[in-house]
Length: 259
Image (cartoon, rainbow, N blue to C red; front, side):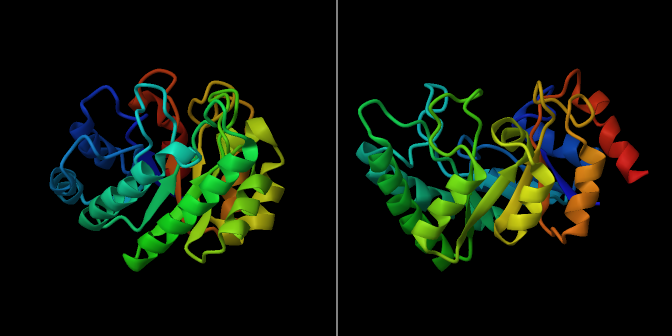
């Protein structure tokens, strides 16, 4: 069975953020991830991680004004300096939190920026980030996201992500495969996982439609979990879904697996 990490941006939202760590531990999780840690001091988060014996699995590089609609700034030619400052900030947090990987959200292509300009900026920014993170023992990953949830998002499928990784040319850059997003954009989940498992460093899940917990939609998760084991996936699987009712009621799928 894969190792599951609770995504605290989506799970246990019945309580405040710092209380979610204890809720995750009580539910049997050993790892956590979330969108961003930057609203809190890194030392404060480390204290709750340690108190609950949790591993910090993943968080994202700063992604601009999230509440204002930004979904990453890595493809914006006008925000390269801001991106680089964000890499420095993420390194500071990752070192305190002992987190060995961070994700870069490409972002929505700004008005007036061509696809070619966006790609050039993205590749250049990833080269900078991958190098800076490597110097600090931290891996970088990128994630493709469906254009139904985020219209205009630059990175939308596995092939495009792997092409970008090849253009960056760093051994410190890999792919985060989000099952939910890729079911919407391309399907063919198991063969894609098998073919590219060597470049897939992190996996996330939610069912489709609805982005709810496994078992609420069309994806055959029992099959996929066995498939991940059979192809030798050793990383974490982040539970990045919206509980259909409450978080604890929605964890039936995981409790069945554990039993």
